[in-house]
Picture 1 (spheres, rainbow, N blue to C red):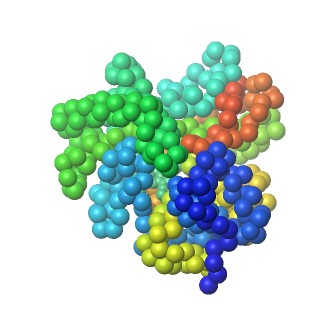
Picture 2 (picture 1 turned 90 degrees about the vertical axis):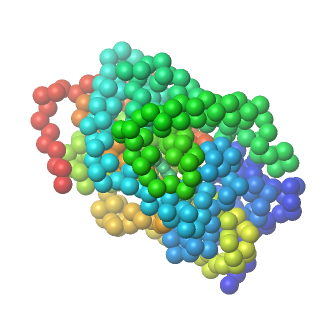
Picture 3 (picture 1 turned 60 degrees about the vertical axis):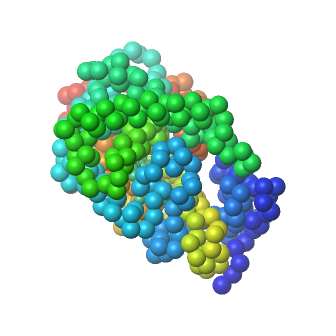
Length: 428
Ligand code: HEM
């Protein structure tokens, strides 16, 4: 069993959090090159931390040895969103997942189909109308917000525009608490942005509690009837589900999809994705492989263990980096190229080597909903538009935190397709 390559540094002075959060991709690339290993250690959040950049390491961490690596109950998510499934462990986490998953699968998910279709139609139908290029990330974030607030709170902008606006703004302020919290390990949790975020949280909680008291139908009604550990659990989870995090992640994927398929040179890819469901699936997998919305996830070693053959001592943090796992050349040949065909060729059946939605027993519970929504939105775009960058030359360099997207918001010009076109859609 080998020692983790790299240096976990000394307390405070050796902390590399700032370097990591400034540019996580350069951070891991430099160290992989230096240590010639896709698993290495450094110091993050003032804790010695193993960084996992390989498919094998990720699978061991999240699947095979998931019982040895636990969620951190002191995570920032707990401070900002309260006690939710995200930072719970053991039996409590299992029971919570069992309850909550029922809200995002099966009949619940089926009952949302019409709403998903109508939101996509409403937000995407006018993209070519102004004749001006659209800032796609903003359009898609609005779409994601309408989806989330409509589904979970039954608040729709066409019915209650002021309440919709108020909740959207509060969610954004609340979200800023997560990113404004200082990385300083000396004075954790204090900044003016953080206290504003906590005020926003209190206001959101009032709205949520009112809904939980008065709504008996829809998502809120179903949530109320779930067996949950205590009386505040339903409201804490509702706060989590409506958080700005989710519309941002959806907008991230839709922006990357639009960019990957933009321009005349991608016309054939767009046509094929529209008419061939298997190919479309490959496109969506390639989008999440190359541009996962979240950089990864974090665990704490509950006991001495190993990952990818390296000793990981009890108490070490462990950070899996989706961006690098998805570019592991052992599994993905030409890792930086956008190749949808790989998913029906060499990488067929290897979707579980991706971790954009986590993996294993603590994977994302919203993955089926996200899949249904993305397919609907992307198919709507493909069916109705051609699109290209406008202006044609833009700086598309990505930033990876808090959510991946080009640092400079890209603008895209949409042209409506001739509605009489007779592409046949293969819905296999
Ligand atoms: C593009 C959209 C989304 C992305 C990229 C995403 C990504 C992720 C990832 C990477 C994890 C695992 C984190 C870890 O390993 O530490 C996760 C967990 C989770 N996701 Fe999502 N998610 C998305 C949408 C949603 C939606 C729509 C919901 C439901 C409202 C949701 C609810 C959750 C919950 C509750 C967990 C925690 C599960 C647990 O800890 O057991 N997510 N998500």
